[in-house]
Length: 117
Length: 113
Image 1 (cartoon, rainbow over the protein chains, first blue to last red):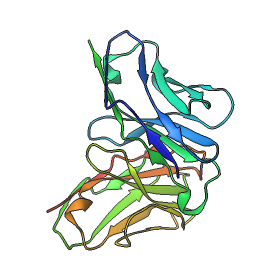
Image 2 (image 1 turned 90 degrees about the vertical axis):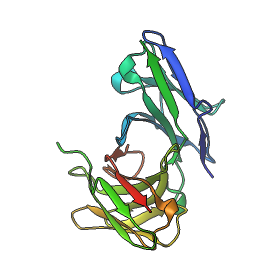
Image 3 (image 1 turned 135 degrees about the vertical axis):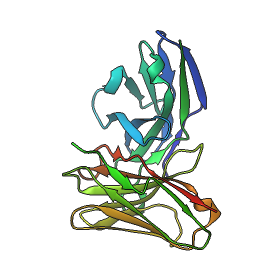
Image 4 (image 1 turned 135 degrees about the horizontal axis):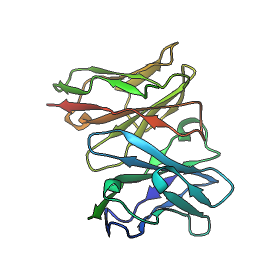
């Protein structure tokens, strides 16, 4: 079975400071990892993904994430936070070798990011 | 280009009724997935369709069914609605299977009373 944990329900950071939103995962094989952002009353927007290759992945709006296989983590980062980054962030995983009914994307419970002006 | 569209935006139903939700994928996308998002939780996978065939099914009862049409649009049907079915239903499309990223629609907010 595959699973995702986002240990922090809420992260607060001051505008201009770096931000980190944490994610750890569990899969049987190799992971496909994704970050999505959700604004109020909206669907999810894709930020970035890790499939293979370079452990540091760069995505939309200045976000990046670092894949760490030994720690089974995929933390989302941004060097300088903006008030407009305030939203709900979801990490998601899928086992690269899953099939049939296991061929699904599993989401974490989400982390509410608030950037304070 | 238009993104993923879903209809209706909001829906109120009574327990025991059935509901049909609709989704139109991004042009050129052949895969559609459905998710249920209960307030305060992450989306839960319901179905994935690719080229009109079911490619995956999540842990949902048989009251939930879906299909994909030749134009790649999709319907999600829920029969015998329960109060617990109240949620935001999200549709996502992608070019194909993984590792292509999924693009989500705005969702349909279903309230069961």
